[in-house]
Structure formats: C-alpha cells, structure tokens
Amino acid sequence: MCICIQFMRDRYTGSGAMVSVTCTHDSHKVFDIGQSTPDPVEFDVETQASARLAGRCLMATLYRPVQCCCQNRVRGKVVVVTGASSGIGFAIAQDLASKGARVYLAGRNIKTGQDTVLKLYKKTGNPAIHFLHVDLQDFSSIHSFVKSFLKCENQLNILVNNAAVFHHPAGLTTDQIEITYQTNYLGVFLLTSLLQSAIQQSSNPRIVFVSSEAHKLVTLQDLVAFKPRQLSPLTTFSDYVKIYGISKLALHLYSQHLVESLPGVYIGLTNPGNVWTPIYRHSWRSWSLKHVLIRLWCYIFMRDAQEGAQSTIHALNAQNPHSGQYINSFMVGEEKQPYDSSLVQRLVADSVFLTGLPATSCCGDRC
Image 1 (cartoon, rainbow, N blue to C red):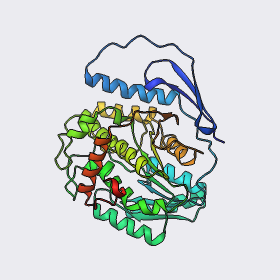
Image 2 (cartoon, one colour; image 1 turned 45 degrees about the vertical axis):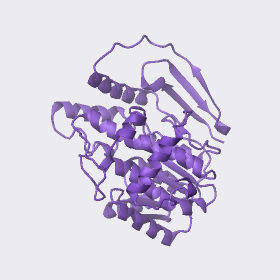
Image 3 (cartoon, rainbow, N blue to C red; image 1 turned 90 degrees about the vertical axis):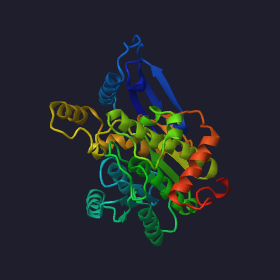
C-alpha cells in the first residue's frame, strides 16, 4: 500500500493550486482548487531566470510533499548509491539502510566515505553498509570500482545514479571530456553498462537516475550540437544551467534506450526539486551582498536533502512503477513523448566510443 499526498502549484508558477493524491497501482487523481492567474509580464532572460528560481523555491517551501509511505521493498536488497556521502545521496542511503538493505556507498573521497559508513551505522544500526571508491571523472576509476564491487557481490538489485556536479569550473577530465558532462552522464553511462550483468542476474532489479527539471531547459538540438571533448564557454549562470541540462537530457535519452534493451529491469528517472545541498558549493562563492543574499534565500526556501530524496525513495519502493517514467518532485509520474530512436541510438553509439566500451557491452546487439 502506498499513499502519498502532495500540495503543489503547476510548474512552481502562479497557476492554480493543485492537490494530488497518489494511491496503489500508480493511480492518482488531481483536483484543481484554485484559479489561474493572468499571463505574466514579459521580462528579459536573466530576470526571468532569477524569478523562476525564486518562485520555485518559494512554492516548494509552501507546498512540501509528505514523505513517501510505500511499503518497504528494499529489505535485504543489494544497493549501490553514488554520491552518498552528503546531500540527497546521503538521505537516500540512510533510508535504504534503515529499511535493512545492503548498501554500498560509492564516492571519490575515501576518508569522507568511511566516516559516512560509521555515521549511517550509528543512525540506523545496520552493519551491512560499505564504502567503495569511485571517481566518475576518471573512467579507469569506474572500472576499478566495478571490479571491487563484483568481488563482494555477484548481483546488484538496485543502482541509484545520484552523483552529479553543477556550476563546476570549466575544464576537462583526465579522459579529456568536459567535466560536467562526464560526471553527470558519461561516467554514469559507463558505470551502469559495466554493472548491467550483475543487475540482470538479480530479482526485480531497478536502476534509478536522479535527474532535474533542467533537462527541460535545453533542446535536443543543444544535445546534438554539444561537443564533449571541447571546453564549454561558461561565463554566465545560464551557461552552467545549460551544460547541466544537457547532461541530464542525455540521461533521459539513455534511460529510454535501457527501457527498450532491458525489459526485465525497472528504469526510473526522478526529480528531487530545488534542494540546498553541497552541489551548490561552486555557486555564489563571493562575500558580495548579492551572493550572500542569494545563498541565504536558497538556504531558507529550498528543500532540504531529506525532502529532495523522497521522489527517489518512492521509485525504489513503489509496488508497480512504470519503467521509463519521470517521477517529479511531488512523487507524481509524468508521461512524456518518446525521443526519436535514431537520436537515442546515436547518443548511445557516441557514448560507447567515448567511454572505450566494446560495441556490444552496453546493449547486446542493439549498438
């Protein structure tokens, strides 16, 4: 039994207030309890972006979803969570550990990871919490992680691809790939591909990608035109949002490919909403009044990590989730039109080439 009640406003804007009641078998009803406001006045792009961020933060605060109350369906499951040392990843890992899952924390800071294991053990009493080092900005590190994991386990029930960066200084990884794109997409692609065999050998396996509404702020043309081996010009906040959005859009196309290639595996995409976590550590760093006020606003009005984890927790515990569906920050699945299959296959083929995988390792005969 799963009952989740949310109060929301459409797209975090000023349109009618909505109440959504989600119950078993993925059914839900939405009741309009408000009236739409007049069309907004047109402003320049930067003003619109600032207003959108402020509006989303405010609405997320006023209409916070309750915690997912789904029945525990992760007890005894073997789970890998990337980026689990802080923020949303930590909240997800804590929930999994408290429900009796066997949790592997995947992160790049060994000391922090080991401390996180002890912290989670003290909080949950679960002794089956482990840390394994991985750096998504280094393909060789991902290969090493998978080898280490497979020495410990022969199957993987759940993979939570949570780790990501935002507003990261421009640069290329050791693999000569744009940092944000490799961390948020190509590294995730490689990790998921290498773990695919272990995932398929488990019962009721699930792969969940923590996504973002930013994937709606870019176009397929932006993704096609993007050059992973070239430094992106990152001079404005909008530039950082764009590269972040491109990396998340790539995840959506890749997830469609997985849905088609792995019919026995649940593939989920989740949106945590606007959450104040260390992902913003590169943003608004100066002590100027403007930056101080922005950080203070975000701290007050953005969701905390526990709230941001709820959509992913829902995807991990829901009884019969619809594979390939995008679960928004209010734990409601959004239907979407499929992407052009030729674009999906092109992305996958390019990803195989860039990560150095053999052509049949990610999807059998489909590449």
